[in-house]
Image (cartoon, rainbow, N blue to C red):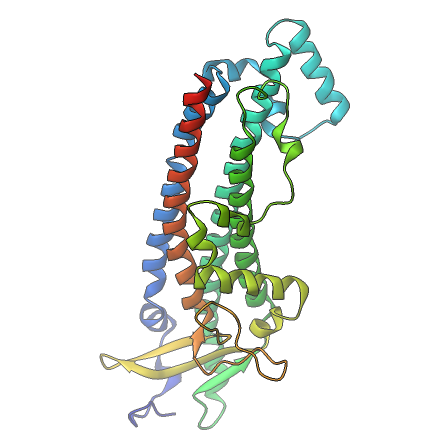
Length: 329
């Protein structure tokens, strides 16, 4: 086997450790970027609670007197009958008034939406890292297979696990964006005059990321990366998008050479897209890859764009809540 500049390579003489050291150095960079994204989301939790308590005129210290079922938002053990009996007991014992109970429900519902927003992004990034790690760990095996093939620098394989990890990551990112749209609509519904009688979550329509067009965040709705992400999610869920990844997993060695190091690599092509993030189509076909896009790089771009979005989204949420609290108080 030879590399791109004609040097002969003995694949069986290269250790796994050497391959791992040389392969995909951007993995470490991406992990650092991901942790920065997680920290950005975590740091707002307390500030969010403070702003919500002011809007609903609640004391945060009182939350520890309330049944945990309120803050579990329907998750956990028990059923609706148990939940209703617990709430009735607390109201009858004068621990909490019925109007304050409704306010705490609204508080908990909005808090839960933000927690889900965080959890979905966290899940998406974890599966992205697992995808990169899994592919890296599979390179030595694939190269051993190539060892038995004369003049073979690259192998293509089917891999359902890779396709699954990519799919979960993409769907989780998109679900987080849709929850951001729901949070924006929730804030719009908050009214100081009705916060002690209406449960806003029951009034939420089916709201999606695209509904942020009505807010200062509309630029993200039109963003090329986010638009391509959502279109891909739709294909993964409703069409055959998952086959793009499952059937097109390329693993090779020694191309290209960087600083005289012969690198192992994996490559999963991502569809050609236009300036709006739409898949380029011809005669009903939409899986062209002449742009040599890489799904690894695309998901890295998603994370970078998500970091920008999260920062702006948090500022928007806190600004809107603070405006509501001024009206309340």
